[in-house]
Amino acid sequence: MSLDSTDTTLPAALEGQPIERVVRDGVEYVVLGTAHVSRASVEAVRELLARERFDAVAVELCASRAQGMRDPDALKKMDLFQVIRQGKAGMVAASLVLSTFQKRLADQFGIEPGAEMKAAMDGAEQRGVPVWLVDREVGTTLKRAWRSVGFWQRFGLMGGLFASVFEREAIEEKEIEKLKQGDMLESAFSEFASQSEPLYRSLIAERDAYMAARLREEAGLAGYGGEPRRVLVVIGAGHLKGLCELLRTQQGDAAAQAAELATLPVKSSWPKWIAIGLVLLVFAAIAIAFHRNAALGAQALRDWVMYTAGFSALGAIVAGGHPLSVLAAAVAGPIKPFRPGVPSGAISAMAEAWVRKPRVADFETLRDDIGHWTGWWKNRVARTLLNFLLVCVGTIAGEYTAGIHIFKSLF
Image 1 (cartoon, rainbow, N blue to C red):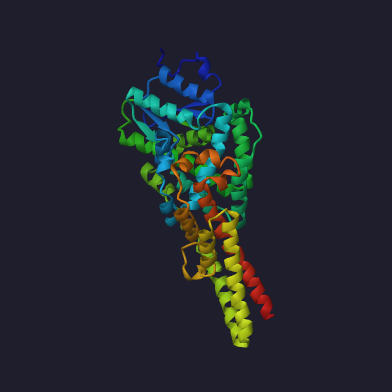
Image 2 (image 1 turned 180 degrees about the horizontal axis):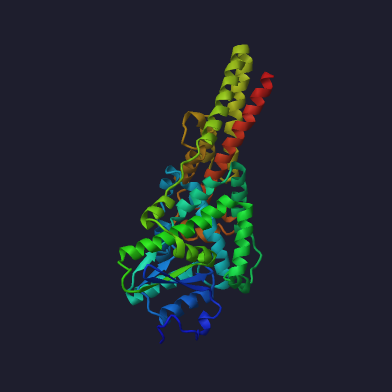
């Protein structure tokens, strides 16, 4: 078995695989670019571990994703009430959609999503070398991406995300393998960046910088820097070029850079103030209506209650909610301005989860169920998340509709 990294006679499993070698501060990083649902990527990881000696193995995973990969039952332990209370229902839904899209590809080719990452972790543990989790927490990345785009772009992002789940067109395996070709990747990501540079920065560029900083930080903590050491880095091929460039050029305190990129940006306050301002305008219009005429004021107040309650309840009905969650939505919609920070969707979703408690089977089949549009209504966990989202959308629609009718009645 050859341990020489300069050996040019490559076995079949490594032929054509995107591998870069970067030496920085006395450490040689052997960076393998992979496709996350590729048999060839799994074989390449195993071949590199068998062929060469490494002092550590780094993977493009955060702690939560690694835990989910190591513990297949982690999803069953999710506390749905806590998810809703903490305002994480939207993020959980988005994460599930992303994992479902990857699972659809994996099912098509008979390989688990992230199998190459699991092979890297298993191989490291078998050899008694440490595993470095160098990716940023997926929740942080999603929130930074969400906050990086404007209001209308968010609707496009959500639409594209959910459309990816229900797309049924088969993808040839050779097309997945092409994702590991550098030129194609550069071209694809350049086009992506031109369409939404903030999204590219949050999803790709920032994570490149974060992973480069984490690799440098881990190497420093391990005391690498004297005798040359070798680290296998297994990452998605889309990060290969950017990560390697940053490994060569990135300067400054690695820990501080990683910590900065792991923080959530300050949430913009102007959308909140605009929303509050619009609601105050509507309430001012209701007050003016009462001042002009008690009957006109009563009509304006009726419009507010009718439209906000009606559209909120409609969201719960479309989500297939229990009558109690529909009632909760109808009550929560009109009083939303008086309880800032508590979405009407959260109240309705908690009622839904209380009346129709998710079963163990719902958690077990969640990812499979939401891969088909009807599964969002059949699975109790998915239906609760859908209830949250649609009631929130319904309440917003009701507020705007009520405002339009009230202002029309005054002028």
